[in-house]
Every structure is written in structure tokens, then in C-alpha cells.
Length: 474
Figure (cartoon, helix red, strand yellow):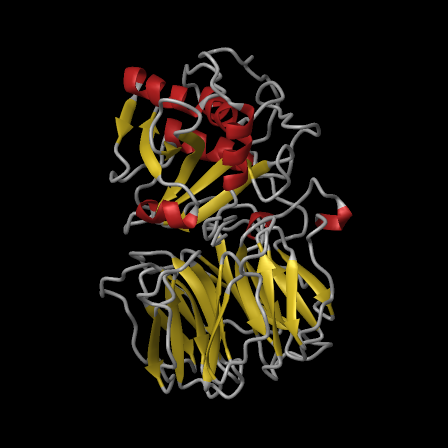
């Protein structure tokens, strides 16, 4: 994300759809008004259709990894790929790297205790190395990828959301959510949006073929061109079903594609179009996998979409704090429900009656883990219950796996308590990953159970489109 998440408008989580759904229905129901759902479930994780990486044009779908310890966040194409011998790398938030097809492994960070999750990846021009970048601007180099510096350990106004290498591989740029640019090696600084008011946060970047310019894209589809990067158009000011999460430029620099959380593709300049997920996976509008990235094949005759919810996860890395007992059960049960719209019908779901169901999902998971909480259809009731039976933490606290994250400004009404998710992973720097019911990017009323993050709770207003007002511990 961000699985820049999903949506995302925030940057990586499309949970605003659930927000709108709850407000439109005026969900403020007395405690216990919803019936408790009794359904069978397997603790083995569910996954979305698509297998994690979905190809269009000449982009094949080589077999990828199986169960993963941390959510998938980035991919980079092997430049040495050919139409008959393709390959790419996938990167997890824990710094794990998975080579697919003809891509070779040059190492990973799975044995390193990271302070902050990985959010981006780029390959060297010859495909014999790659870089990983973390949300705090840390850089990790492998193979023939040289280290030219990083922002790790330097206070940032906004988290890093992506990176791009120079054409000769002797430098790279990092971009932050406020449009700030950090240049290293032979990567020249051509300008940035840092310090300028933005309508929406920046979610990605791409460099021109000669390295003398770059583009930035914001979640509202706005485009910013610097250096010799031509402006071919944008979606800024246009109504979008879901926020834009990434972009990719053609090798010639003659155009670019933008991709939204729902897999919708927006084409500009000479960039080719080979299809999208805008109508749902397999043409099913109720099955909309959350998309977090896009990458061209080396010949630009196809592209891949990165679909983080297409894998099953153990959420076992980072291992500290490692959930145990009830918390581990909450993580496992929540994870087992990740899937597209679980019950067809407007707001229908397996966790309660046909109504906005993010709170019904959260309380159902806690119930299945042995917590005696009623089935609540209103998120504010979870806050009240935790205040009386568990513990309420302020938004500045560090939550633990199994805790509920409450979005909005307070528990008083449906206009202030907007959405709820369950924490399944916590990072040393405070970043979290959540599993959330009744979330996007599917159409309102046909929402899903998604994985959201990693993101910093203090940046939730930007990332998710709504702040966090509390964490509730069972």
C-alpha cells in the first residue's frame, strides 16, 4: 500500500467509502441492536482473486510467493526481461524480497530488525541489483545497487512514499507525501512541491528517460512536472471513484499512466492502454481488488498491477511486539476474512444485518476470539465498551496487535466516529497495519474486508482521509 493502501482519499486506504456509507445511513444504533452473526470460518487467510500481481498486454503472470510474513508494498521490473522471459521483484514491508521469473535474488532485510516499514523499491539499469526505501527515508542497497545516501534518521515533514533511480543507476530520488524531493548521487534536483499547499498528498513519482526531469502524482490525480518532464495532462479536479496510488512513465518519456486503488487506469500522452480493473476483477463490479502499484514491462507493451491483498499473510515480521493468546487469535481471525464483498446485496454481510458493517465486523472478530462484546453496528459503541470493560488509548499511544483503531474525532455520533479497523501489525516507529471491514475500493454497499497500511497513525488524516481519535483494547 500504500497497500499506500487502499485505499486511499487518503494515500493508501479506500476506507473513505465506508465513512460515506455510514454517514449516509445515519448509523447510530443502540448497543446490541444488531444480531450476532454465527458463521463458520477457516483461520487460514482468505485472499482476493488475482494472485497478487495482475498482468495486461504482454505482461505475463509468473507464479509468485505463497504465505508472507508482512504485507507486500512494492515491485520493480527486471530491465533484462524480454517478452518471452519476464521477471520482477516484489518487496514486503519487512524488507523481504521475492524474485519472480528471470529476476535473481541479491539479498533482503528479513534478518534485520527494521525501525520503519519499507514502502518503495527500484532496480538498477542492468537488473543486477535493487534499492529498498523505508517510510522514514532509509535506503538499503543490494547487488550492484550502490548506496548514495538516505534520509534515515533525519526528521521529515511527511513520510516517504516512493523513489525513482537515475538512468545510469548512479543516483536516485525519494519523494515524500508533501511533494518534497530528496536527491542522491547523480540525481539532480529539478524542483519539488515541498512547502507548497497541495489539494491531495503525493503518492508516487517517475523519472524521464534522460534523468533530467521527473513527474509527481497526487492521490487526486494531479500531476506535477519538473525539469524536462513534459506535462501531458492529469486527473486533478476530475471526480474519481478512488484515489490514485501510483504512476509509471513510458521508456521514451512520451506519456504516463496513473492507477487508482480500484485498478482504474488513466492514460496520458503516448502511453498505451491494455486494460484495467476499473470494472472489477474478471468484469465483476463487486470484486474489486485494492491496487497499490503499476509497472511497465521493459518493452512497454504491457504492465502489471500490484494487488497486495492477493496474498495470504502471517503478519509475523516484525516480530516485536508479537501478539499472543487473545491478541494472536484476533489477528488470525481478522486475517481469515480478507476478501471481496463477502455477501452480495446492498451492505449485506456475514457479521450482522444489511447495513454499514465496519463495527459489526470488528466486534464479530473480537467475539470469535472469546471477548464478550456485543455486536455493535456503531463504532462509537466500541469506544464506550472498551472504556467500561477494556482500555481506551489516545491516538498518540502505540497500539498492539488485536486493538481496534477508531477513526474520526470522537465517539459521540456517526458524524464524528467514522470507521473502525483492527490492528494486525505494529512497527517500532509506530506504523501499523490493519484489517478493516466494510472498506473500499468496491462501490459503496458492496465493500469488502481489506488490509490497510503500513501507515503512521499520526498521518492518518492524510493517508486515510480521516484522523484517529482513539485505540480500543479488548
